[in-house]
Each structure stands twice: as structure tokens, then as C-alpha cells.
Length: 264
Image (tube, rainbow, N blue to C red):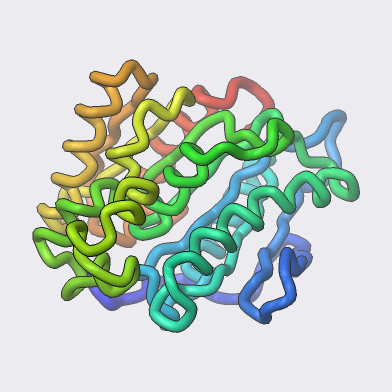
């Protein structure tokens, strides 16, 4: 993944943003955006940023998407989490699960519909989103759909290809042989079927290796019986999270199809 942020990742938002802690550590928080009140609670997207699980990348990567979702009538929970380079793999995975579970409390105070919950993850965030979907969560926060934007969906193969200069082994604390249990639990390819609709998105100008991971995952998910939509659009790695792009417009339409009616 290129170390270049997309244009427009400003902290200024045209929508009200509430920062909510889901734990006691300073990195255990999320930003909640809820669109203007309508006749019924809004669907909600959990946004998980990427960055090869390293601390230099933060949730501001997903802020333009969060604003766009609010404009379209969807709430968003843009999650920060402790990254593996400073806190270890167990902290990262525990934080993401805790953040999703915390939506049960958020829904008690805000008009969000947890029956129409979609997990949207970009790059390493795609892996985290798919893992959460595979894990046993409380029924109240069980996702209805998953969207992977250039997700790292096969961890063993990603490490074999040394993506991100060995980012997978660095995050998980070793190779697949050394950390077999962690790879089995965390690699989306090994957790199929998920049992929910999925949208798998790649960009023509992205890394061929990252695109191949998504292709391998999509083939395995379809073989396992999961409902799947595959989008291969123009642009590069960061085009996928640019709300001005055609590929994001296509992704959003397919997300609506997975969730049903209720958004604009």
C-alpha cells in the first residue's frame, strides 16, 4: 500500500460528530455521525481504517466517507483502535470487537438501526471487518453485511508475499508456522462462510498482490455458499475510500442492496 493519504482527509465535518469512548485507553474511541432525524432510525456503517495495523495511520482516513454516508442518510461509527505495532495483535482484535459491541449502548441514545448494520473496512481494516463478522458477536450487533475495500483477506498469502515489508508477521507476532492459531482465527479466508452478504471491492491501479488476495477470497467465499458481489473499478488503493469516485458510488449502491431500503 502506498504511504500517501487521499485528498480531502480533513477533520472538519459538515455533520455533527460525537466522539465516544468504548474503553479506557486514549485510542479506544469512535466518531459517531448520525444524519438529520427521519421517521425511523438510520442504518449504521462501522468504518475500520487500514494502514497495515501500524500506528501512523488513523481514523481520519475514513472521515470523508463518514460525511458522505451522513449526506446519504446513513449513520457511521468511525472506529479508532490500538494498533498492533505498539500494543500487540490481541489488543487490536479485542478493540475492534469491543467497538462493535459498544453500538448496543450507542443505539440506546441515538436513532441507529442495528438490524441494518454494515461493516466497511479498507485494506487492513477489511481484514478486521471480516474477522468481526466471523466472530460470535451478541445478536444485537450482528452485522447484516460486509464491505471489503482492498481488504487483506488472506493473511498467510499476504505474509508469503511480504506485503507491507512483512506487515502481517509484524502485526501477528510471527509467521504462519509460528503463530498458526492466530492466523487461523484472524485470516478471513479461513473463517468462511460468513453467512452474510458481502461486497468485495478492488481497484485496477492498486497492488496486483492486494487485488489477488481479494480474488482468492471471493472465489473461496462463493464456493462456501456466501452471497457475494465483486466490484473491480478504476483508480488506486485510496480511490476506494474517496466519496467522489465512481467506484465508491457503485460500492454504495451494492451496500444498499445488501441492507435493503432505507437510505438515499
